[in-house]
Image (cartoon, rainbow, N blue to C red; front, side):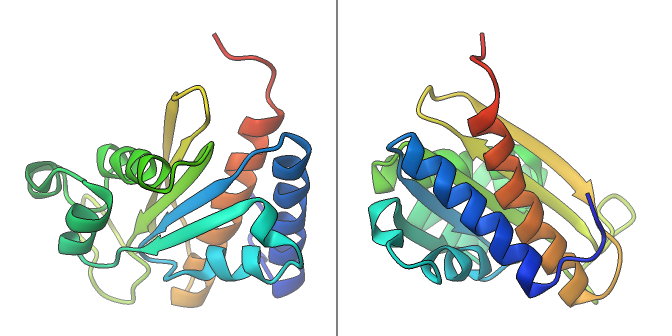
Length: 171
């Protein structure tokens, strides 16, 4: 993934995803933590987004992840909020609560503090779920300052769903 994610590039990713969702007649929900609603902002910057974008959950705290998305509190305690299992439950929770086809989740450590040896600053976990119910997750380690990490996270979230929507049938 490219390291420069300026506003124009992010807007292009959002437009491409919007086109794919509209073409498939699908609706999207988001569960964002470290990006603080940035993906939702990009989606709703597009005219006509109400045709394919349902809602976004900004669940920055562990309590919000549990209350709004149904993430298991014991899972957060055991794995940490920044983990692929938590990202998976965030995505499924957003999909189910919004009653949509697709959902994206993002949870990470954007810094400058908050990192650990196991999860350094720049660690971000993503979850994607499609209408078939299959959940996919990824963990990335992005470099740079807080803004760069958040921009890379936004780009990865959008491109990740776009790639999955364009993928051939999964078995």
